[in-house]
Amino acid sequence: LLDITDKKNTEEELREINKKLESALEEQKDLQRQKDDFLGIASHELKTPVTSLKAYTQVLQKILQKKGDLKEAEMMRKMDAQLNRLTNLIGDLLDVTKMNSGRIEFNSAHFDFDEMLRSVIEELQRTSEKHRIIEHLGEVGFVTADRERIGQVMTNLISNAIKYSPNHSEIKVSSEIREEEVLVCVEDKGIGIPQDKLQKVFEQFYRVSGQMQHTFPGLGLGLYISAEIIKREGGRLWVNSREGEGSTFCFTLPLKR
Ligand code: ADP
Image (cartoon, rainbow, N blue to C red; front, top):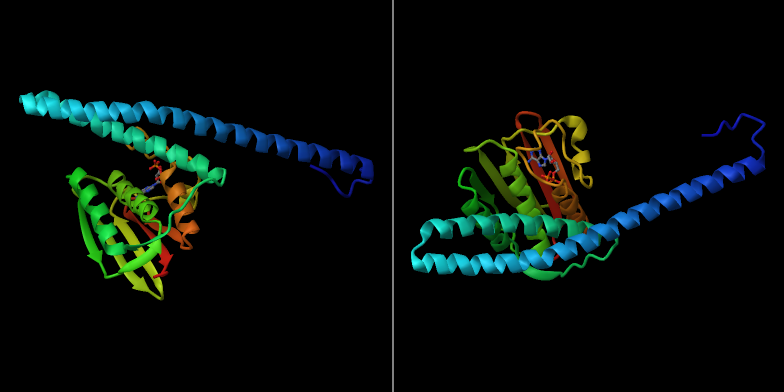
């Protein structure tokens, strides 16, 4: 921007450039704020009708089932599953806007870590018949953190492992205590991540291109949110991966019993 060896650049000129830079930076921040505000309002407004749609489909599904209209009941179940996806996407958008504005709240409590892990795995195994989730769970016991938020991280990591690996492949979830920390890893034999993208996947809205986005739907927010949650809880989240071979996402949590 500025050649400091050029003697023609007087102090006055320097001040002028500085001012311009500051105002460009302010403008940039303002745009970011506007984007966050818009995302926050839009996702909040979307949430209400989707919640009510979900309630209606569930009632209708029960009525149809009782009447013996099983085909129609199955359609309602599928509709409900799609509404769940929508609810999760809206939830991610809301989380990101809360994180960006520092308004996200954490409810720390004492909870049974092993029970939480098992219930997340059970739920995901129930809805993903084409993958087998293998548990290598050690005894972690009780920890102090936001149970729901840690569950959200687990759901994100296992859902990604399922999404980015071929049908009938195995996903390994392991947990243990190592050096006064909880260590959890999710390993898949999927498409993997190129070495130069290993850090980028934790950025907001980032998705590795060339991975056939249509085949793998998503907004590119899950890992950003997960990394923020783990950071807030005092841990680390990282990935090891080889393209075409698979990925292993791991995180630690301090043992605050
Ligand atoms: P999304 O899956 O919605 O795109 P994420 O933030 O969860 O968003 O992930 C960001 C990107 O990281 C994904 O788009 C994908 O390119 C890559 N990625 C995440 N998990 C995996 C995985 N287990 N295997 C391969 N690529 C992954």
